[in-house]
Image (tube, rainbow, N blue to C red; front, side):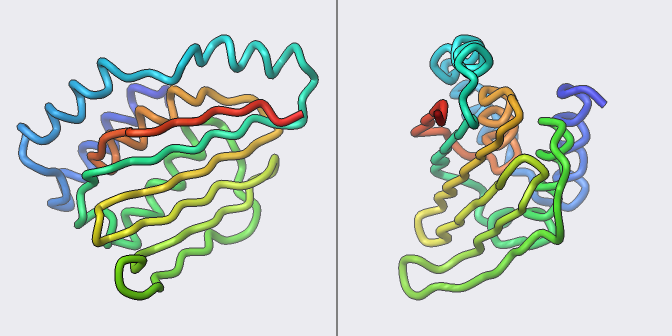
Length: 166
């Protein structure tokens, strides 16, 4: 399954579950993604390949996300399993997902070991913000992850940091 099919299946699944926002809000996300791309993702992946570095780390901050999706443990599980397929990574063990916190810091967090390292995410319901971290010793496309995550959670990527870890 290619990236386009995964994105289409994701949209269909969210629509079927009643989690898609109005088309106008999805247009805002799409327009944001058109203007937004990770700074030189090809160069970063090339730098990673050439350097012999230990890993590639991507930190993504999404704002104005769909609160219904953020509050749905099943939707978060689907996100993680779909992301693993999209970047061709293999899960190790069970996905850990827990809702906890107090006041402004309440929401779900998840962690998923992968054969080559770790995925994690933190969801802050009050601010409709999501903080995602992907670290892997195997190369992947940071741009694909940003686009998929923004579309899936219907949020706006406000900060993306991609680091080659020596």
